Length: 177
Image (cartoon, rainbow, N blue to C red):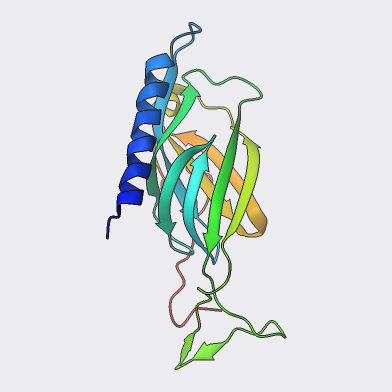
């Protein structure tokens, strides 16, 4: 269900993207406004994500093999050394554990822990070099266990031979912790 609050958030994101696109060329270097995609390699839901303060609601499921698209990140068309981005994400969900750390089963399924407080995490990471056709590619954010974040600008996508990170293996009822 779309709420008024979520509509306002989407509108702010689009206004930010348009504003970013309108000022891109001010310093003479070409900049690109591109969508970004989250690939969630963790066992936790990622409910929201931002890049350099721009982002919104994603609801990316744990070990989700596909990308969740969001608008937008502004990147120089030509990569430069030291290019950094700040990724902030909201983590929630996952599987409930008892005091000994054992996963809790309920009615034959692992119990989700939706009642725990939301956790926000932030990482600033370097953008690896991109050139050639990758300079026209999308921006991919990969969040791995232990809060490891890897980003790249890539013309293909996950699952392609040149994509440097494996697809996460989805959690099924039989594979859950």
